[in-house]
Length: 256
Image (cartoon, rainbow, N blue to C red; front, side, top):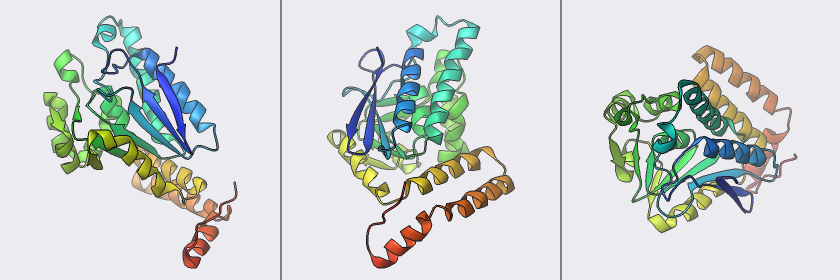
């Protein structure tokens, strides 16, 4: 049985993480379920945006299930962390925007998941942290996005102490983009999807691709890649239609 459920709201897919207990603890099965759900959504041309949330009302996710993790052998640990890495990279490189709707604890691997999202909306009761060092393991893989997001000094403090921050502190340091009341998180996330309604899906896919290249490549290499996609975009007709619509003060109509 999948640990990730999918609900459609117009052209938005809402993916709910349903790990063990009300804290939505992360395990290999959940990562695999999320991978499958992301593949299904990515294959649906009618879906323009994704909202990622925790199932229930208690938590986005309190992180990795320690009952599962403590039983891992070294080979199993490698499979575990590689699957998490694959899932997060998939979120990072999807063709459409991904919005994290965060209530309650968002810790460890869950924080790494939201670091890959494009917009992060948190409830007032949300908390954030990477407590891995407190349970005998280092923070790895997409924890590397944290210094790029909040700065090296703040990232060092969070990662090396295993401490947590509130949603207001997370907003101040740029870890999240908006803080709302707990019962408004999904509504705020759905409202955020409207910001992308009149943007060409082809342009959005290209922009997301460029962001990933900025992370992975050197400055000159990523600039050359960006120039290539910029140039190719004009062959689609989407830039011309978007500019014409802007000048004519109407909504653009993009071909497929």
